[in-house]
Length: 301
Image 1 (cartoon, rainbow, N blue to C red):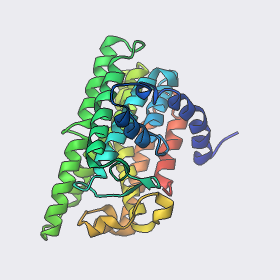
Image 2 (tube, helix red, strand yellow):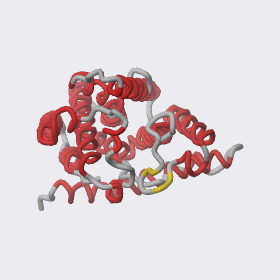
Image 3 (cartoon, rainbow, N blue to C red):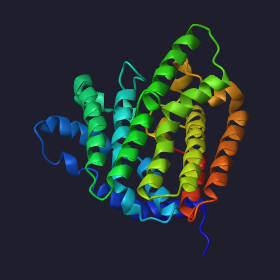
Image 4 (cartoon, rainbow, N blue to C red):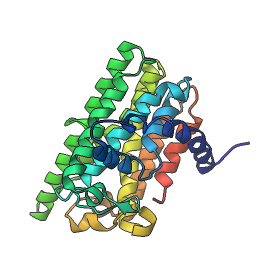
C-alpha cells in the first residue's frame, strides 16, 4: 500500500522518535550543576518534531544502514539545534518570550542561566559524538568536522550574525538582495539541516556519490524549510505555531514573502523542494526521506 507523504512521515516519526528520546536526556541525569541541567532539559523537552535527528537517521537508512547507526549524530544535532534556539530567543537576539507554546528558557530561568544552558548543550554535543564507541575513529572525526563547520561561524552562527547585520541595514533604509537573503538562510538554517543528512551519510558509511547527493539534498531542504518558515510567519497564528508570528517585518527582517511576495515565495519553495527530491531519487532507499522533504515544505507549523 502506498502511503501519502504525511502518512509515511507519521509512521517514521512513530518508530524513530522513541528511539531518539530513549537516549537524548541520559547525559543530564547527574552532574555538579543540577539547576543548569534542569534548564537544558527544560529546553530539550519543550517539544518539536525532532526534524534534524529524524533527517539524520532517515539519511542513514536511505543509504542502506540502520537508523541506530546514526543515533549519536542525531542526539548531537538536537543539542546544537536546541542551544541555538535558546540563544536566538534572548533579548539581544530575536527577543522571544514563547517557544513551542512554552516560556522561553531565559523567561523561565533568567538570561544568565539560559546563556549557560546553551553553552552546555553546544559543548555536550561534541562530547557525546566524540564518545560514540560504535562509530569508527576516522568517521567520528569526519562527523565532528561536519558538525563543527555547520554549527560555527562558517555555518549557523555566521548566518545569525549576517541576519542581525541585515536587520540593522534594513532599518537604516539599505535594501537587502535576494542573494543576500539566500546566503543568510543557507548558513543560519540550512547549514544544520544539510549537516543532518551528511552526518547520516557518514554514520551509514555511504558511498561518495550518495554522500554528495545527500549533502545537495540537505542544502535544498534547508532552503525550503526556511522559505516555509517565512511564509508561516506571515500567514499563520501564534496558537498554531507555538511562538509569536508576524514579528519579522516589525524587526526589519527581510523574508521571502517580503522580497518576492507570497506567490513568489511559494514558487521558490516548490523549486527548492523539487531539487531535493531529484537529489534523493538516486539513493538506494529514498522513500522515507523524500516523504519528509515533501512534508516539511507543506507543514502548517
